[in-house]
Image (cartoon, rainbow over all chains, first blue to last red; front, side, top):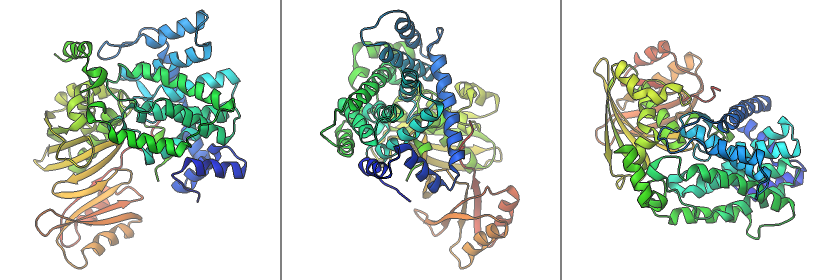
Length: 291
Length: 227
């Protein structure tokens, strides 16, 4: 059974067998869980169902988080992107809107799919929804792409982390964006090697991103980091498809992520003690909400 | 190696997989260890849990789990109120995680059941909704809650393991893993057996009839797939 903690090896195997990464990931999972591929596929499809519903729901008006700190972000951006010419491009703006929308659903104690975490739950759905829309992808392509994302995510989790408390936001929104970038490339017909470059390019841009949630809530700046994550993922995918390569291989980028995460003080790792969480406005909001 | 469904999933009520979904799973396992309806819970929160629990709904999620809720249960939001209605008194404490070599998101749950039975369960939410139970009463364990499990505290005697495993085998239950754990102090041991199939109350009773056992409990696995 093919099993590895190296994305480079996963990519190499995919290139040798002339198949997309997701086929290897699905094969490995089926062998590991002693479960038929069809059943795994159906399960992933049901998760995509919840993700899509959250995407649709999130850009509606009328949401309000428990704290009242957020709610309208997805709706506002969606309205803007649909009705006005944007500076960053319609697809990028829509992806950002959708990512924020799902994030708002999460902050309102609504139902989402952790991918890999709830804090980053907006990124993968938004990227896949938007990229699929842009290229006219089938549902099969989308589900396959989710397996690609999961395959990379497993390795990022194993080698570095997907927990803000251990690796900062680079481990949550960073990992989600990196996974999504690779997934988008495969969905758009790119090679496994290009998928690897997309993930590397994406992760390099968010090295050292801290987890500094205002008032300890998964809202500020989390919701907007989901937006940036989605935009970063699509941009990184485009760069890779354009032929741009990451000089530092993806495995080493993840290794660096791990190193940086370990060097980060705990004040910047989901404890709300430093960074944005420690600004005068943040402390005032905290007091207002919790007394 | 992990599963793709450790990365994509769980389907959950937000806002945080480590501080909400993972917390709900910890609570649910603790309820399973108690094996009866809890009437009192003293929950100590460490590290990041301690610092951000109100904002992430960690307290609601832990209590929701104690009440038997799954990670995608819409009632989690109202768990603290529901606890009152169901006769569960809850008290929260926070503690510094400096002593804890494990993980920044750790909770220690002291539970009292309807019959007066008491258990202590300590565990961590290790990311993405996954959990690791590190301590049950005086035993250091390492249970992820993905399999059904039997925990049998026993005297150190020949044949005691065979009694338990034989009973499982006779009832068609396959053992996935088995680990022997010694207590911090004293001479009692703990058998931690993870099984492929669920263990019914009937089989649990048959196990309890075996020699040299002090206490036997079963743990139901955290929900794997319930979309």
